[in-house]
Image 1: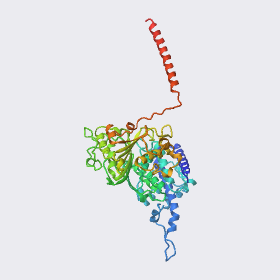
Image 2: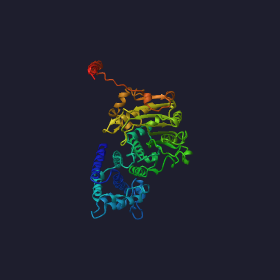
Image 3: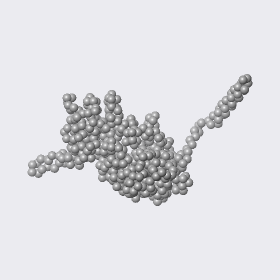
Image 4: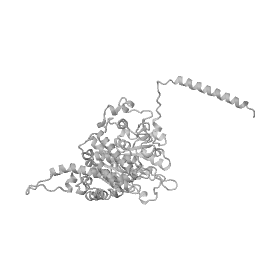
Length: 534
């Protein structure tokens, strides 16, 4: 199935499922988890059918009886599938007579799968009794179309991600809406900048696990035969119970082995990963103002080498610089981190400024990218992407790459922007060239004139150069001169684009003529006012 086929299938399935919801009384939030549960059921059946052929082929023959032994749960686990009980198979649900309770049957299927797959224990939705029976049967049929039944590989993973994105756009399932889902453009830029291809991967605010999923795609894009689970070890922490469940389902759908814990990263370090991570990626909640500065764990936290950002009253007014230190501290001696941060953090003052100064003086801050409005689906605020690299080359030790990408975007809708493939390639190429790597490093699978246009427009020689209004490499002295600001706009300048075909001289004459006429009218009006006798 081609990428175009997958995109068409995603849209067809979403449109069908969303139309069914539109004709029901369910909100997007009520609909989200049960619908994603059906995607997982369908996926489990497809993966089972794929594995069944291989499993039965490889079963050993008993030399005494001449017959193959029965397949076991372990046989299917080795093939990346679940040995499905009969009543947990999607085909069983599709064929269920009208007289049978479809909601009870689906709830039972979820329980049976949890019993067979410990990583999913207690997280699959079992609230299908809240759905109208006809709606449920129609939904089951939507995911039984020929194209869905015949889907192979990671198609279901991509469908799951697509549905998460669409629910996020609808503001489903989060207090502020969509906080379980980081837009693909931001995730992919982080991944292409830090290039997580091996080792321990950690996201201490993992939401629905999108960073891990895109990392798996990154690994497979570069070597389809490489085992993701042999390449990386995944650890995620998530505060909200429902988001943690989404992440576990997301990893299961993609066949990624990982550990997801429901915990508060401000007060816990559940995996004890300080100094152990090869890569850290995150989109943490911005500007959290209710962190308990007196919490015992926090006061002794080895993830805060530069201290807590305390106010004069001994409180923590903002959690941004807790996150900034956590991500730094999790890294091993060559580790890289990329994370989303509120725009205010690059110039924050007082205790936060002192922490920022110490971070900069380590020489491990590698790059800051300014991102414009409308990249998040439910918030229009701009943000920054921060990047650390403890394995910088010596010549870059006290240099930081500043990229102002606020004018780099593709308009998807009137309220949503993203990066095109051209932008993704070009921005990644800037980072690669700064590091001294080939421009297409990590993006060899998408090279070509169709994606290199934006990059060649700004870097015609294919070599890094500071571009006014876009990027600049700054050294420690320049940062000190700017009072340790990490705002790219302070360094890159403003790009002034002149239209050389525009008749500036002629337009100025027109403006002067208009101004003279308006002045004359104003004088005439003033004379009339003054002539009026009061």
